[in-house]
Image 1 (cartoon, rainbow, N blue to C red):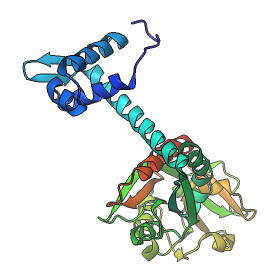
Image 2: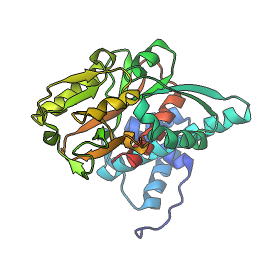
Image 3: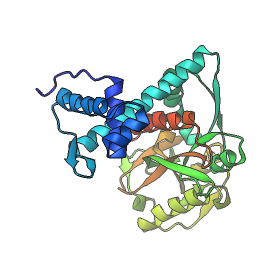
Image 4: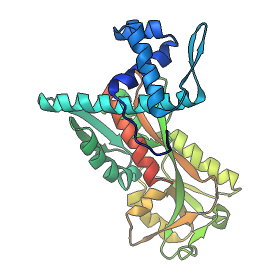
Length: 305
């Protein structure tokens, strides 16, 4: 087949391909699909002819995927999952059923990710109604665990065996300083340029994993911190930066919302990133939560690079 040529594939062929791939045997796959073995074999041969690629290696013990077949399987399973989610959402919408999902997110995530994610969810998951709530740093995981929220988005949330934490992207940090700070006019800085300055950060008990990661990043840069100022709500305390001896490390998305008294400066240190995570309860395997995760992964990777 010529490269770029269109192929004519039916859902029956694709589902037949997935079944045979999983079973490794036409007979067992045919039994699961309630079709005859000759008909299923014919479908697989037709699929290979249609795309012009050998998908299976035939052996005495059954079939095994070729490298090309494995690549196609990943793509087909993703496509079928999206299609099935769309069909389920359409049916629920037509029946008047709407799924309500409560989403918690920490403050900086409300600056960039949530404004892009919410319309994408409403556009792609038609039966979904989202109730979103901004919570304090460190409160996303406990809120999801308690059942107040169904899912959440947070930077470096604390692990818990009852929670599933899914990595979406690594977000770069930036430095927040007062407009009058000696580094405020810089395009970018290194952490070592802040030697002798105090760090403004939330209390460790509110978000220990996140707190420890920030201090670890400072330690890797051999940055000596003569003082650590801890306040649970950093944004309202931005006036504390006015002493010109204090800085804060925040996700770069924090700089989306400009404040007249604060300057956000890029960090040059290569490893100055924090993980953005999707949080859900480990025992909650509802399909709509998986659909939200898929959309969030795509949106976050597009926004955060």
